Image (tube, rainbow, N blue to C red; front, side, top):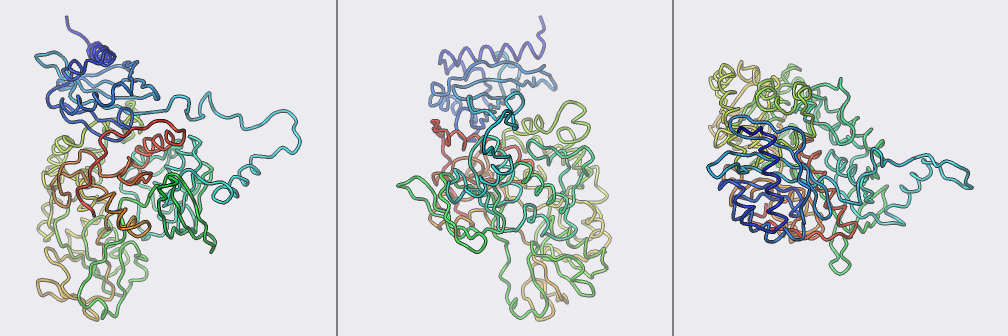
Length: 601
């Protein structure tokens, strides 16, 4: 008798739950393939961890099974089968939470076994968000003397929090990551203040170069609770994104301290709280949160290389993050050092404004044409077609999360093999122009480069054609050896006249912020932020299995790091907010397998 995919998945989940409930760890692990993966987002480990292989799964369960007390595993919807793999969604519960998961089953001689297994915490029992049927009334009916309006209560909260009352969480950084996490915490009733040096929410986008647009499509970029309207552009311009973030901050009633600079933070071990000194409206304010979150993007300070003769340059030199736009460069010769997203965007905008511009490419760059990327890499999960087939961004996020990092590259290599064929003409013309191309150390392309090193790529939205046809001049395989008063000398001896020098040279590690705002000792205790330990270029081993220090406990108590692109900020803020909420409510949160520190920067 042939069983349907749903019957096979239901049977596996039932046997799995029985083995868990009886504590039969051998039976549990025998339900997994030898090369299996169990990725857990907080539900079992109070951590973000992937157990790779049966021994690791068994070790985790020996430590966590009794305390977690998992139960009520139930198939959600209908399972499907393709290429010999059964895909199934399920729900489950633990002692303190409810969760959702994903299962990939393989048929083996021993029967159906799990190849990949994802468990995620969705809500804490008794501490659910007040939404749907549980939403607050808002209006207080009846008669009451000295009743306060919503506005008065909101103003009172804003006036007191940080002064008469202390927040439980302070988030340093009010860009997209800080705003999204604050919205999650607001929904969970956790008192939070966001500290941002810019005046208005969204300024971190508004202040970038004029031509900046999102290179990721709208379906990938929704914020929690309030998705973009259905006529929102596929690639949103920076100022439109900035306005949305400002609106979102106001509507979500976030305690957002703009024009506020964090000066210093230190942890008081005796009190178990942070002391965070900020300057707001010209006055020092000391905040004393229990939890401190750094949400300063995916990187640290701007990388500005030290080049001999820089101090003699008579023109303007600046990092790409400070680029004023092409208008200030008209009639001048511009040299852009770098060949990733910002470099291409800036060069294209300069060409459009009739500016003489030369790109200096130091090392090879991965190029992913936007249309091909949308169709081949993102279309199945984040597109209008995906939505029509029942995959909204919530489901897409979980599908994405269900692929363990250890094998993720194998899912991506065929995508970029196809891209090489589809865009062979463009790639050929780029190489003829001297542009140095790569597809990552193992051919896995853009997203793996992003996860491993956060650099080394450009999503082509038009600039590559300008490089290929010579409109943007190119010098590749060289660096700037010396800066002269009105020119730069390259390592091949070439001298380029220059009135403006733009350093599109990326950013340093996020924990540089920790070294300055807290201390070098704390930065070293936390260690390098980002990367998987893949032993590929700029991602030194050993293998970590997850992104270093992101959205999970660090080796500095009560210090967290949040960031990433809009997709990551949206998805992983859910799990960071639940970890913070659990601690706010005094729940036991034993962290399994706190990650070791192997690299400091």
